Image (cartoon, rainbow, N blue to C red):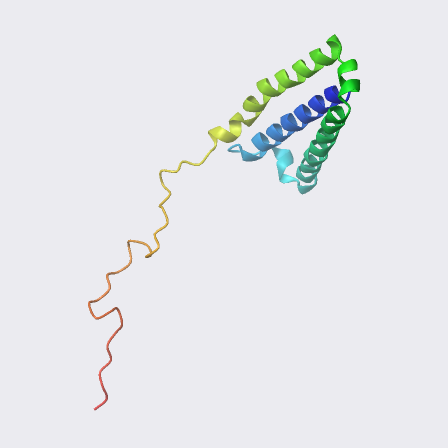
Length: 134
């Protein structure tokens, strides 16, 4: 049972994370993403689901005899269904964010000696020479 809970909870967390990422990163973000409370609530939900799913997974691994004794068609079917939903939904939910990715063609690489459009430096080292007082 803990194995099924682990797989379902981790899959649900991944699906919710992909949905929220796609909603935040698309060209025109969803209306709910503009409210800090709702965005924080989704982040908190994903943050809570991850350790809960990992905890159930570790619990299933600690006592393998109980885990193997509890395996039946429903458990295996539920795990396959949860993984299948994750495999189908996550790329589709993240697709709006990938389409809105910024083109890197206009990005200029870092130049340690400064931008190339600076005025040329004079041969005298770049410092203006002052006349000596007479």
